Image (cartoon, rainbow, N blue to C red; front, side):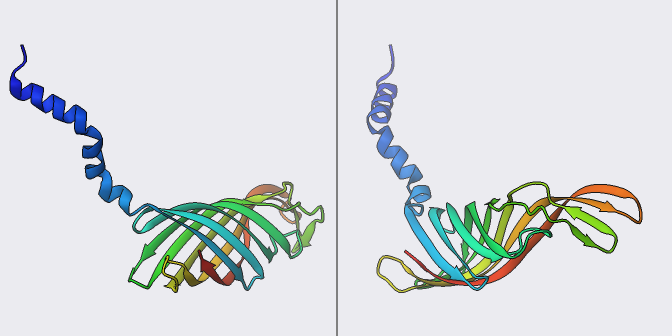
Length: 193
């Protein structure tokens, strides 16, 4: 036979477990109930669109797409390079009407590898694969102008393409395969909805 105190506690727990969980976890989820859409244009030239969900007060996770003009590989010309990516935003120096943020974007650039070979200084370079790994890193400033939290922002970001490059050195008669990086820097202006 169970004592009355234990039975009472079990009944209270069973009846009010959901309310208890909400009270315990409310500080974690309360600050993460906000999603935003960032749309901007940049000086590279190009544009980007990012959906970001604030999971914590200072941290947002999201997905996005962009397209910028730059030279993605050593053998390609300057061209429009679209990309899709996962996004991480870290807000800091948050005030009522403005804040600064860092962001990191990781994804894939879409382009066709150029069949032209690059020859310079007795080196023969050849890019064999289409597409490359996209990495974007930046710093931005946001200023709220609407009651719902929307507003203008400016950012400075690097747009990088990591790719594989086959290289043959005629002087050393040596063949190598390596990873290389090409990219550009863009100053962007946009609106957070």
